[in-house]
Length: 205
Ligand code: GDP
Image 1 (spheres, protein in one colour):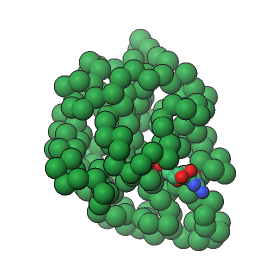
Image 2: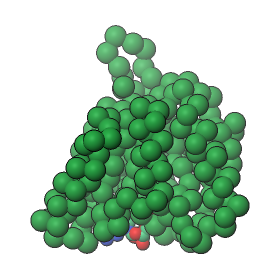
Image 3: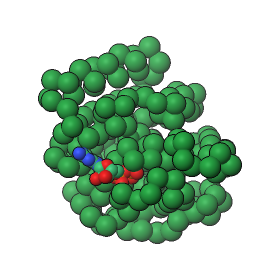
């Protein structure tokens, strides 16, 4: 697993506090409680890496995780990171804080040169809420590749999960050639290898 060995680097309240903007990074976003921390832990095979089950709206920071250098053909190994973005699209997060993060994340997605792609974590039972649509709109506007994990797939039958995936892909079709999606479950370890591949592909982009 190339994402194993991820390590906490720092937590930041604004983009100026993030690690130096070089190498390659992939950002993770999702509404609070969508299952982002669980997904990060599953992908990195590191149970306590991102804190799960926190009170919604509490952990309002960007967190940087360092990865082992990524091998890229014909180039020196890449300095690679994962960035856990705060999920501010949640009613219980105070308006002022949501506004702060909206501006920070907007600036981050537009300005961060080392950013190679976004992994958007979406609860498969509640696809594309306002927060998700905003994230996708950022990606479409900046042509940033986006990979959606439809997580908690264990909560649906296989058939229902496939239908949700097909519906999401239909929504993308007109909007973005850069968006991809898959079914995921941290609880049932569904789609973990596929998601790791997607992250590695983004890092090497
Ligand atoms: P975050 O706020 O997006 O970081 O979400 P967490 O990873 O903390 O998960 C929120 C809640 O959903 C927790 O109670 C998790 O145990 C649960 N959860 C996360 N992923 C899954 C999953 O794949 N399947 C199921 N059934 N529950 C999940």
